[in-house]
Image 1 (cartoon, rainbow, N blue to C red):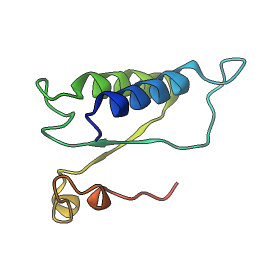
Image 2 (image 1 turned 45 degrees about the horizontal axis):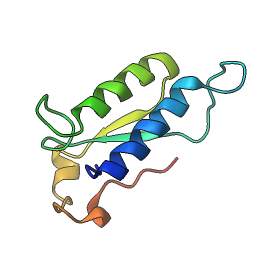
Image 3 (image 1 turned 60 degrees about the horizontal axis):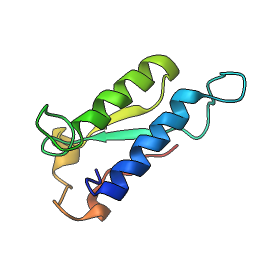
Image 4 (image 1 turned 120 degrees about the vertical axis):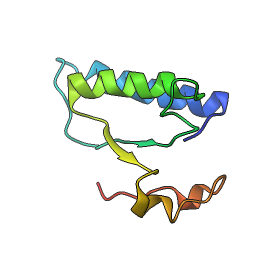
Amino acid sequence: MDTSPEGRLVIREVLNAIDAGLGNGETPIFPISVFQLKSGVNYNVDDKNYDLFRQACKVSAKRLFPNFVSIDAPYNLQYYKPGDYNSYIATIN
């Protein structure tokens, strides 16, 4: 959800670490990462973080993580407030 240069860097490098796996290429089962999808942030081709969504899809296809959650789903969207990180979806992992 972070579109700042620093936030994008952190997200990209976390995805790179998940993609690399453990020392012998194993997929770690913890921590479970969750990629939050939001139209206007990372879901559409013209969104600033769309490249990170694509990277997350590739990593998930290889490592089964990250999982995905849609902020735009009706149940979640009712609690979302733009610009308020406290309204992002909390998941139990």
